[in-house]
Image (cartoon, rainbow, N blue to C red; front, top):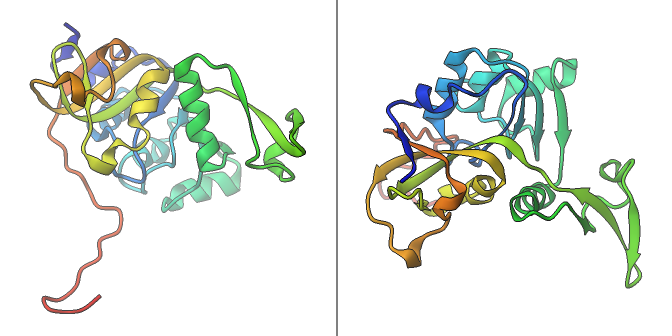
Length: 231
């Protein structure tokens, strides 16, 4: 059985200043929102955060950003976060932007124990600066190193007592690969219950602790239409 924490704060209390953390989600979909909020309450600083983007101004990782708790972001785009854009352009935060597929593969490789891989993405651009370039079958590829983290914060729909996880639809996004790439993986789950072996996405061997939380699940961009109106 895996550790089931009584609160989000208990789950993240040992994350120290300067830690490297991965945070699952895409925009504000599938983010471990309660763990992020708890991390903001601890006041931990100088974090290096690996995540697809940095949430929005007042939600998700945007909370940590606003409180100047993040030293460096490794992500694929600035997204809808104005504060992220401001800190990036003013030099207040270090940012490493990567092609989205490269970011995903660097994380997946880290979880699989693969130290590096070659990819054609970014060849001939600033992404390739300082990186080894090799030619395979007449095509250039750049060497990208894998990513791992001290802690991975992920969000799942359900877990069983052994830590096996399943996810809800597109909320799966970056969560499974990040769960495998963290030295300590903390899963924020909506419910505990049976997880049939055939449904397991993240095996419990990757998960060290869990916390059951109610989620607000904000919508990044809300689009509405009148009843009967054609889109």
